[in-house]
Image: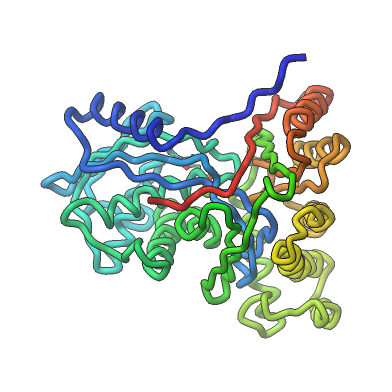
Length: 399
Ligand code: ADP
Ligand code: MG
């Protein structure tokens, strides 16, 4: 059998070279600089970020690179290797509901920084990326955060200082506003925090109640493990409406329980809280959120104790809860998770918002090719599109 290919990350030199080449080909001359930001994979803590909860992403080595040059006027002209046509606007025309298409993400970040009192001028920019698109690995945050770095570092432009974590937190908040208010995707804050505030070799424990972060050692090599990411290539059918519905259900439950967010419900108070809610569906949604936050805490305790090899059952329980109580899995995700476990994974779960996208499997060092082959075989048997794989390590943040 031929080995299943792994999607390799570009190194800094390769990404920069590609971004500069696309820039020169499109706009002539050289950019003011090249900035980049990573995609992310969440280890555990799914659908908790809009509930004031905890999540635990790592930044991927896979990054989006932006070559940008300031313009003397207020025009924005963007090209991406991934998109067939260029995207143009005047900055003055960027407002909630006024722009659409992929350029809404970068233009939205410029708009959000302007709202903070940090206007940019117009710009030409070329985008290249090795982050899989729409795969639950946050290519959207990688795009926003690479531009956020460019907007604060291009000569003559200023903004929150990316040299400090507080500055990066402010940039992340601006990127969230861009995604929510300009691109129109109602996501929580995990993705942008992961892309801007992570550290290499660490998992990012993000407390979305107060924005506090901690950097938790995450050394797969030392533990004799690998993290295999399985991009199922499954369409995110209905994803926008379903995501918004889950969020609305949680917000309504918090209101019924008279708490600001579901974070205030502790595992010991869960049964009492569930008894106060009407209907099976809200109860199951709340049970997922409360138990998932507890699983993040247990996962972090194991990492801190140097017991990374023991987190598998927490990953499995997270998947069961997301598929059963929260109902955001998909047939492809369930098959990927099951096949990975049968092929020797210590634990596996869907990651990201769900309804397609990616799964992760924690596997013994060197086992990724065999597990990938087993998952590919299981997909073929089901008649699914062949999945794409990458091996993840905790990479550095946007720079
Ligand atoms: P995910 O963030 O999981 O990859 P999303 O649906 O949130 O999926 O974001 C994908 C969208 O982000 C794309 O459809 C496109 O509009 C935009 N995008 C991401 N990366 C790029 C890129 N390199 N070039 C142009 N647009 C991009
Ligand atoms: Mg996204």
